Image 1 (cartoon, rainbow, N blue to C red):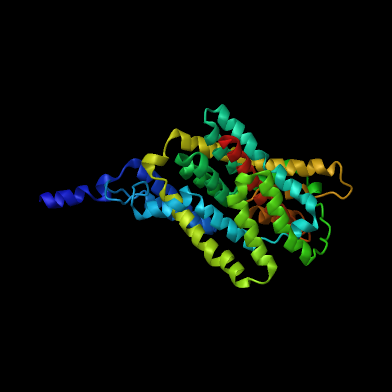
Image 2: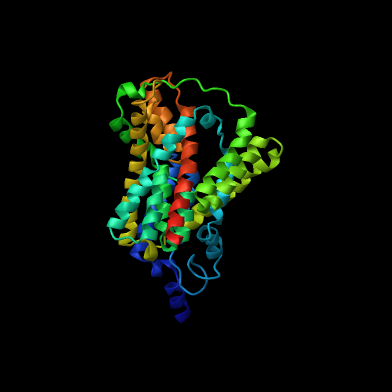
Length: 375
């Protein structure tokens, strides 16, 4: 009888805490959104399942939980806390990115830069609410709408906040179809949404090959702390564009990035143990994350409108919403918004140009914030 009672006391049913149950519901909701609604399933499905996994109650001291030394999950989580997984993901992103659209119309790079205003605005808001400077920097980077960059910077500055910041960043990336359209409609007129972008010029092979080398040098000289992200990113791109290592490029953009994405999603989700995750700071981070993402979207759009005051050939300000680095979700949403107004208006390639500049911009901003706080 004692053995039976001991067994029952060690089951999850006995050990369950209301916080675990809340997080299991949240994880199940993410899984539902990924499968039923098809909201960024590559992100939400691993994260949602990880949230459920991380909140299965267990008895402490046996090396089971993600925060227990020598547990399997703890070892897998090392790739998050060390910044290894984000660097690997950036390698794959580089091998998937086509910079020809950006090179064909370089002024679109300014929209990617403008969208980073959400990072610094949220940084100031977080400071005002009592977060420390490292914590505020980690929260602010959510405005870049870049999950790997958010994880990387948080791992360096505020590792105790990786769970809520990563979940917030990836959640808002997945919810682009809900968050961005109302902002785009609010800040643009129908006439602006109907603006057609000109045909893109043909970009030479020499430009495409030179760009990742020059881009890496310029960006990392400006913000050396961005080397762990932008180094692999531009390396992955030159693997793709060189045309002489197709096998390596294909591996980087398929097997390598897929493996890292699975491990990031699962372990970040598992890090949201109810007793660690559910606290007032996490709620504040989610609210500030929504502000960051909204301000970033609005900043890009408003800067596009500002540019039109000086340009003879107007640009469609919707493109500013693609300045956040949520690849390719925000570019797709911009294109769909333009299509709702005019089925013959194709904005996708131009939006991809803004999107790719946003990836670079958010990584540079992360490097700048990191360098300020370690300098």
